[in-house]
Structure formats: structure tokens, C-alpha cells
Image (tube, rainbow, N blue to C red; front, side, top):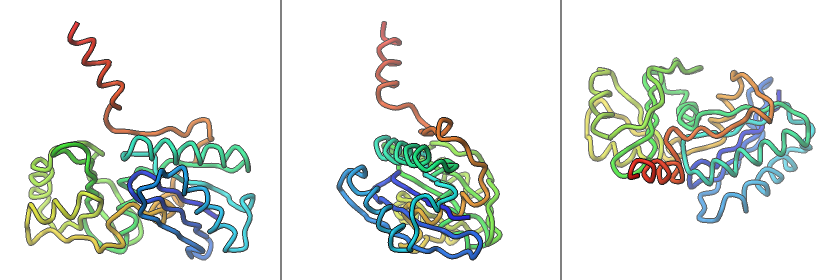
Length: 230
């Protein structure tokens, strides 16, 4: 099966092409950019597909990071995948950004904790048990304070590999001999992790693909505040 993976959930715009039969990444491109992801993600996709000698109709499944992450970035990625899935008639699936991060570090055997910056002192996080080939969730995805996360990991009692855009700050501020920081290439969102997770995920139709924010978007918060103040 040929899987195209896309991640636009953070400051990186990333796409990868993975052949599950040979377990080879045929191509991967990640760009850390200040530009709107809508400007760069489709050119990246076209480049990697063309460079491998394939055409879009060769793709069997398209996977995308569906959250948490940047509201705008997530919407761009999901909209692009829905459009491509409709156009070429292939299946698609949404992959948790947190799980994608953990899969980018799948060779680590033990506990992997994905930590993404939310707002203020809050982080999006989830911890997984890795056997080097697959992941098992230890807890639900959640948005909590960094202090709460530090307490949770302390009770875990084992070494923990930290990844995600909030991992470096967390590692420095909550120094512990039990914490291991992922290397730079495994720390930020990457489409390779999305592809690996998608290989064993249940596909959905393009109509069913949606964004998962984990927290209310600003418009919802403003409306709720307005109603509560009446």
C-alpha cells in the first residue's frame, strides 16, 4: 500500500510517501516555514510524488494530522486531504498529531510522551508505551498544565522520551534523570510519523474526515463568554 502523509499542524509543513509493502519511505520533505501552509503543502506533495516516478492515482491512502495543533494549519491540511481523496478516489484517515510525534520516535522502547504547546502554561499531551514497532496509549489525549504533566510522569516511574514542540522547554524546566529529550529530527511534527500511524489505522471517507482540536476554538470561547455574561 502506498501512503501519502501530510502534517500541517505546527510550524512545519511536511509530506511523506511510504510504501508499506517494502517498509521504505520513498520520499519525505519537511519545511520549517513562516509562510501559510496553504502556500507550500501542495507544491511539496507534487514534488515528492513526481520525484518518485509516481502519479497521484497510484496512492492508496492519504493520512493527515487532524489535531491538536494550529487551528489554521489543521484546517488547511484536512481540507487538502479531503480534496485529494475526492479527486483520486482513495481512502483517507486522520491521525492524532500527538500519536504522529510518538511514531516518529517509534524505535525507542519504553514510554514516549508527546508534549505540544497550547496556551500559557498549558500543553497538549499524551503518553504511549512503545515496543519498537507499535504504540499503546497509556492515557487519553488531554490539555493540562505542565505541572500536572510533570506529576503524572513522576508517578509513571520509568524513563520517558519527550517529543513535540513543547518538549525542550519542559525538559529544561523540569529536570529529571528519568527524562530523555528526543533528537531534533524527532522532536517536531513530521509526516513520516503520520504515515507509520496510518499504516494500521482505520480509514474513513473524505466526508467523515474532520479536525480534532482538543479545546474550543476562539469563536466558541467568545460566544460562551458572551452567553455567560448575560
